[in-house]
Amino acid sequence: MPERGGQDGQGPLSTPSTPIPTTADAAPAGTGPAGRPPAATAAVRRTSLLVTLVLGGLTALPPLSMDMYLPALPEVTDALRAPAATVQLTLTACLAGMALGQLVVGPMSDKWGRRRPLLVGMIVYVLATAVCAFAPDIELLIAFRLLQGLAGAAGIVIARAVVRDLYDGVEMARFFSTLMLISGVAPVVAPLIGGQVLRLTDWRGVFAVLTVIGAVLTAVVFTWLHETLPAERRHSGGVGEALRTMGGLLKDRVFTGYMLAGGFAFAALFAYISASPFVVQEIYGASPQTFSLLFGLNSVGLVVVGQINGKLLIGRVSLDKALGLGLAVITLAATALLLMTSGAFGDVGLAPIAAGLFVLMSAMGLAMPNTNAQALMRTPNAAGSASALLGTSSFLVGAVASPLVGIAGDATAVPMAVVQLASAVAALLCFLLLCRPWQRGHEPLAAAAAPAARNGAPGQK
Image (cartoon, rainbow, N blue to C red; front, side):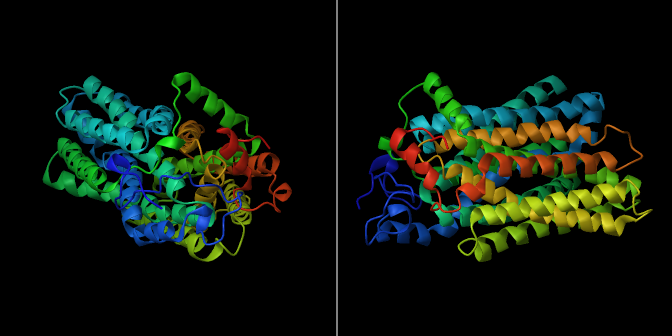
């Protein structure tokens, strides 16, 4: 099959110009996954490492932007003579920008393709980060951290949309599990990098390093990431159509179920990230080095289970069964944590708490990639908008959950466990009541996407 020329032309990450049908449509004999011809399927497989590196870099940039900066917060407070609470707004602004920016960039990528909005977002990210490095006061730093988050959101939302363009069904679920390897490691490595940068320079140097990383990634995207959304599959409307598309997605009960299940699972993860430094070090008396070790082990658990999901389970077990197992384990681990932190078993010490957190975090490797894959398989013609809703809902629910972990003060870890259990139960209920996997067990993978392929909007179940 010939490929598009010019911007959509041949390249390491280009895709066939013919729309990729869903697996619900009968694929003619001699075709590969999702109806792609064998040559196109082989091309995707040959470039799978390059795809992983480029999209992994885009996925890792937001956590790098957030977490590399964390060790510098006290220094920023002193250097800009700002209260600690005001300096914390630089984190809030970046997080809010990442959440809201996805709602803008996702529909843009459905209208203009993936490449142009991504390049514009990356260029703005580099410029905003460079301004942060020279910010003379806290107000300007907060403003450009917001812009940095808005622009950095392009990498998150378009990376998921590109995966939807290039892969379908089992292949897509496996690729999301592979991305877990990078997205799970980035938050662990980022503070370590930031700490080493601070040994050589001041807090402005952290933003200088982020500027260089952003510039290099922009160059890589410009050189290697060719257009993956053919012109005939793009939307021609404006803001009104984008809003209608998102409204149609939210009216699709099954899509909304997967979106909410993933968002609430992400809230349990955010509760862990927000509370674990305090719980492990202040309540259970661990040293910073012990906390770093436990944090790293939990991230390794998440990555390993994500790889088990992609390499061993997918293709042998349905995505819904793997997802249900992950949500059930998260719920059980959160229940155990609540019982332990509330004193039901007496003073249990750090080791059982650390074990519970490890199990909870590891099970995220089953929950997060499979919710993304199942939701995006319902939206072949609106992957950008769907990706935006998935990302924004996760960030917003996580941002709401994070402050709740400290609501009872600094003498108990119960609020963390309560938030995690409530989030896990909510995720499981959304999955069972809205997705109703037992009603769709007879369907082929992504069969529900067929109405969307025919009508240009997600079909309602």
